[in-house]
Length: 268
Image (cartoon, rainbow, N blue to C red):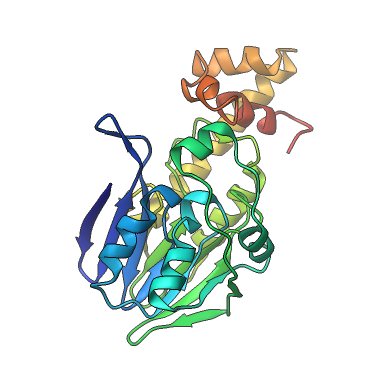
């Protein structure tokens, strides 16, 4: 399924595989002044391609290599004849492929292998200049695209919510904290976050500051309970009461325990 939303000059493309009338998981790409940021998942590639044939698309970039962000790369290259750009660490993963867990294959599917080019330091469109900012944490090859004059920040999967409660097993919470701190220090009074979940956050710096405060408070609680010799599962249950329902569905790949373990003293 593809849903199109408009935010002034920015077109948001929300995509997700539909089963029994329900979208399993939404992911968002963005089109602004001929620049397409991410291409969604393989299951929605043809639907996205049909939409893009009627649009002005001149450049394509990926925020990182994950399957729900590069799924239509091959289709876009073939149909539109455009080069795609990604972080240097993403290039071999997009070109040669990478294994998916069972739930990832079902929800997003395997992307076709694609050859992409290394991102420059800035992306220029007809009207805008986007700074490419390295923001590892969600993945080592993650970047965001920031337009300082407009205050637009396309965050990919770096920012999820102010009150993060779970983590992927392969994410690095220290990297996420550091990268969001980097965005907080950008020399603009405020910014709007355009996230890969489809959430648009007008007061982005305020949201990032709230997230960092939340993580400091959560780290303190985890440390105090660890000091009482509680185990990670015991700490999880004391703070969050229970594990997320996503944990068994993803084989523990998305889980509260992943976040707790990384916040414990001596870890992360």
